[in-house]
Amino acid sequence: MRLEDRAFFKAHYARYPQIHSDNTFTNMVCWNHYADYRYAQVDGSVVLSSTIGGVTRFRPPIGPRDPGLMAELLGLACRAGDGRPVGFMDRATADWVQDNFGPVEVELDRDQSEYVYRARDLADLPNGMYRSARRQLNRFKRSYAYTVEPFTAEKCDEARKFLLEWCEWKGTDGDPGLKNEKEAFLFAIDQFAALGLSGLLIRVKDKIGAMSIFEPLNETTAVVHFEKGLPDCEGVYKAINTETAAVLADKFEFINRESDMGIPGLREAKMRYHPHHMVEVYSMKGKLPGMHRCFCDCLAGFREAAGKVCW
Image (cartoon, rainbow, N blue to C red):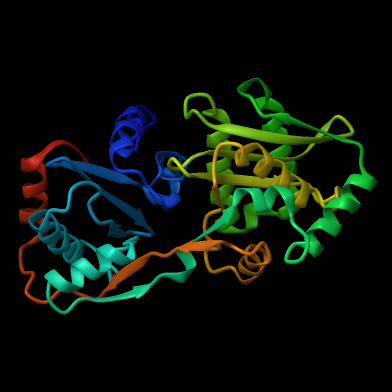
């Protein structure tokens, strides 16, 4: 995945809007150092793959429903992948695969399912469900003199210093997951303008105390890709969450705040904000009976049909 591919994905996703952030171009290019995302154009569809730890997995084609293409993809995935060769299927696609391609076992991937909230709820924190969050936000407002301002490309150097300070506090170099997130966040900062992103920062005592980076996901939903706050400003996460939502609520009904990756503390924190719904994704398990085409034949078929292949 290359930065130059953004225009292609922007045009394709205008025709086939996404609801899960993992398929967004921003996510793929920022995390490419970790997941080695690749794609192929085949008969008006886009097929995505990622390779993590030497294991390649695929996603269902993004485009018109095409049984032949899906059959070829399943054959390729079962030869090249592991026990979960195809993932990130929505419920409708999972049902379609089970109905049309024999006895296929799929299961909910809860760790990668994403949390979607009403933007106005996160902005206003109405009494009742959000009482605790509102108390913490009010405490922050009483304790600190702060300003809220848009994050722009001109502030990238300052943002990098903020992130590196946050990483030092969290000890990211000793945690593979956080270390990869650091690289993804730094890429987003460095390529902020080229990616067409938006952002917000909270400044406390003339210093960045928190920041967020976000963009439209589809017509009704925005996605928050990154959000960080320093530990010496108690309640700053509540503030950046609320301020970001206030900016987005004027244009979007919903905010996708991505998955919890199976991290218990993160799951608890996301549930406390009362998601409106989850973007559920499903993974295919095991091998598909009857698929005997070899890896080379399947890949050759993709190459022959594709107008452009980036495997």
